Image 1 (tube, rainbow, N blue to C red):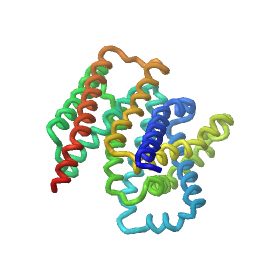
Image 2: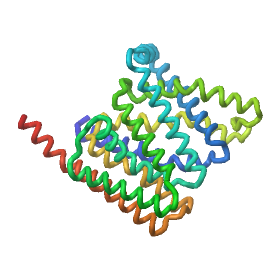
Image 3: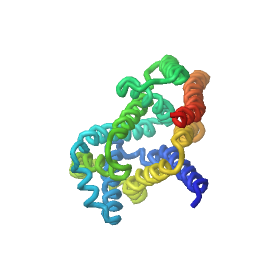
Image 4: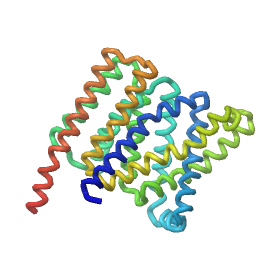
Length: 302
């Protein structure tokens, strides 16, 4: 396979991963009759079971266990597990509450939150146009907050939980599959007993909600794992700049779903607020692309 073909396959995989994530609101909307906490618990349990089966069938179980027991591995994944569970729960709550457009806003803001965390926590330096884009995004969120009359907490919770999750994963040592396996394994002893408790007290949805919903709950493991595997494979094949630009497929699709399919309100003030955020992202993305050749030239001189 030529490098061009390899990058082509990588681009297709990235688009597929982001498109699946973009369609997630439809999937969880089908399950909105089930409580959000039960849905997240099912997602944790079935993702853990599915990944466990994949690792076991690939003959990598001992390798995974050895890596998970290595010094310094468990602590960051404990934090990652908490953050991803918060992210999943808020996402399901937003979809169930008819706030799909807020999920789009959250994931539009998330990359800039990651940048801000890098500056504050990792002492990373920003270039002038990056500061401008960060300031514009902040202004957009403030404007939306003022016009909504309330803080868009779901969007901010998604942005900060996913941004912090990405920061933790940056220092974590396991690969994508093994890392998610460890995270869900950490949450498994909480999620499974909760589901059993719901069954005992007569509040469980599994089986009782009908065959269709039961199958969807069981399939949540595959649904969670598939885009992650596509993304991990794409990340190995295409430049980070292209991957970064393509990531906005997800929030764009979620926003369109919220407005066009679920008829969520999107008036003049929303357009202005989102427009400010989109401008910030456009500046940030273009600055990153234009800065790459300069960085390569500097490295070649060295």
